Length: 131
Image (cartoon, rainbow, N blue to C red; front, side, top):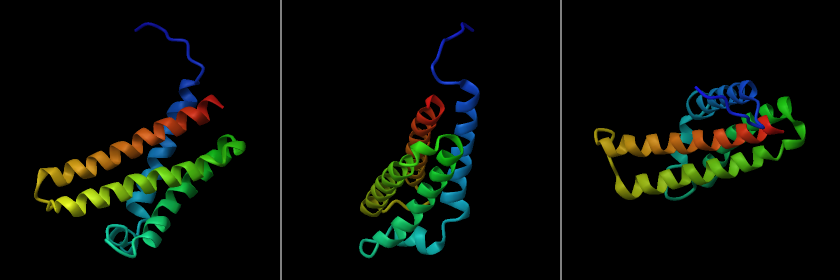
């Protein structure tokens, strides 16, 4: 395989990708309460559960940024906003389509949600690794 020159250290980038994957697992699956998961999907009174959930994402990103480059603390705010947009979008599409868990399209929606979160994490990791 040919060698590529890159301004981003590959080792640091790989460790950051791993840190963001752990953050995603924690925020979306281990720390998300029923109140957050069900509340953010509602048609009304969804803002508080959504903000609590995406706050977990922002907090995780803040911790990662503070360990790597504290001046980039504001990436936590960006992550909060991006995760809120992705999760709210998924909720709106899910409610509109009403796919049951037995329909493959339900899982496509979940997969698209997780894909968009990982693409976000790649971008955050690139910013932090290049800093």
